[in-house]
Length: 238
Image (cartoon, rainbow, N blue to C red):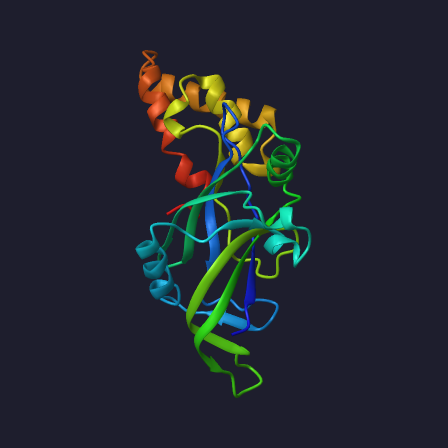
């Protein structure tokens, strides 16, 4: 059975404050969206495959560029590990962690994702059940069930609806100071959030919080409030 590929755009690769542990989350596939090959994956298509992987006690490998398309053997080495995969109403939500950040190759991949140059996710799969379109306006295929073989980080995406909500180096709870939040907002907000923008945002919020508190600012409460902005900054996280 032929293996196909369905590619989705990372769109928002973001790093939080702190050590570089290379963890990230996002979507490997978006339901109902037509990719450049004309295929659509419907909700529930991954269900049986994920169940089969769970029975094996592991998840599909994380490769770079689908293993180089039959290139050198080293290209088939995983670049990281997928820690979780699950379907939700939007698509296939995934979380993973890059390997070997202390090596040249690992750092290159990490920096490429951070810079937005390595900006796609692509699944390698085999179509198990599908419907072929019969009208010009129909998708080429509507995929009802697929066997998920691998999930790669790639350079050239074809489905621009899926997003990576976070590439993080520390949990949100590690943010302890207003300066930490400035850095976090700058990274999480993407290109529109410069360091000055993040600093102005935190400064303005601090002034508002102090005014509403009657001059008696509860910094711990303010920090907790800032944590709640994560969903506003990364609305694609489920």
